[in-house]
Image (tube, rainbow, N blue to C red; front, top):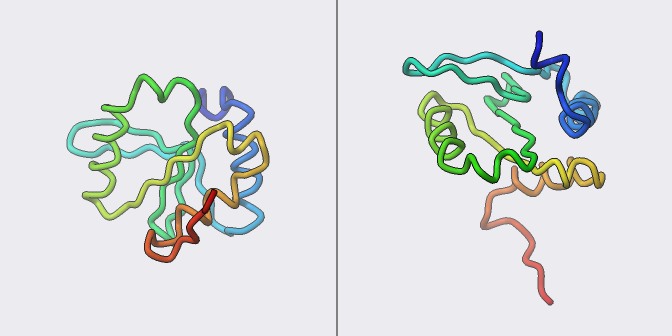
Length: 111
């Protein structure tokens, strides 16, 4: 409950956008994997997809986030991380679509 109350603006905006496209969106979902406790910002059970909104805090948590990614991957849940900056600038859905597109099918950007 505390996590739901204290969500930052980017996390709340991402949730509002997700709910426009997906019927079943779970917020701040608790998982216990191999003795470790985790909370996901958003979990889409139909797609076995975790969506994490990363603020500045995550810049110092790269090792922990990588381990967390592996733990969820091991139980069949794909994790997508999107920066709070992208959410706040209105690019959440486009960034999510981009990250859901297989790498070999993404359009290349040329300078």
